[in-house]
Length: 405
Ligand SMILES: *Cc1c(COP(=O)(O)O)cnc(C)c1O
Image (cartoon, rainbow, N blue to C red; front, side, top):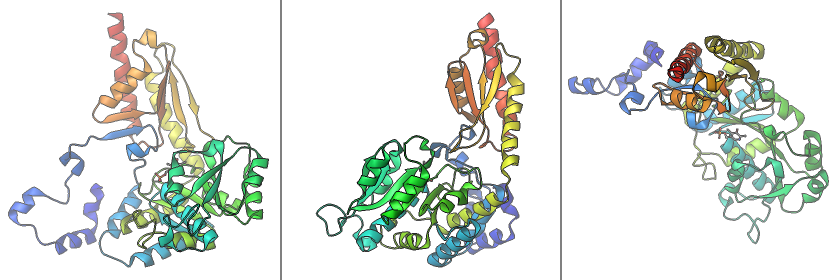
């Protein structure tokens, strides 16, 4: 964020808070590094878009958009509405909203589906929803292999999951209390495919949510699933899209996104505690603009090039070999799988990973199993591949010498 000092408007905003006194000046300045003040260590992320690692770093133009958005207030609902219209147009869907993340997107979709099915109001969710309540419709149909930790995002609305395995189960699962279906896109297991899933639900007039949180790249996925007919599609803002980590997208049909928006903050609704500040809404929009300027081939090439840089630093070690592994859906980016003879080198990949993590800055690798270390390069900042290559080499080389001595 060093470039922010160059923003003329930021200087004026700072002036609005009063000229610093001589003592105040010594205590804080525009250039303070709060991670240093808080004694929080820096991470070099060779692991991937993990929430616990604060996921992606925003590109400079997104950082700049966030900083500019902080300069003055706006009407929140005007910003929410206009951001939604802008994103829907860019991502070729009927409607969109900026949520506090993919998990929030799923909550707002569930609230919309419950509202649509029961004819209730946002404040009724969740207390007036469910068996024996004023509004009994609360069931979301999910394939057993698509159950996951984010089911909780639906429970928040008073929903319960009805599990199915076969297409026959699925057809029979629709009943008077069904409100929605949820499809976990990267599960890649489950007997029921996209088309059957959509067809049966739509024959029953039930909307379908698709969780595609980590499923960009490829860029076209941002419109592929809404194009297939999913009523709701959720993406994380802070993963491959590189927006703010506490932002996400809910894309879909206008009727349903409008209902989701009613359940969003600042309304007194299930989404009230899932506030997205003006800075993050603008950051999310800027990240969508950024993504649409990227090129899938160029990105994949760059991530592989970084992996090659790291590989070249260690390829002369005993038994060294490498390959790149790319998941088909979700985190679709090449991971360098580096294998070597751990006995001959004198240190196992798990120990290498632990040593790299303990360093400052801490280098987080993707996996360490048997004789193979996994290194994900897509979340590295430009040039960090050189640091990873150098530090990996250092950790491996003395280990060999020690082992021989
Ligand atoms: C990361 C992830 C989420 C949650 O995304 P947030 O943006 O952190 O809320 C939900 N579903 C899946 C499949 C994910 O990978």
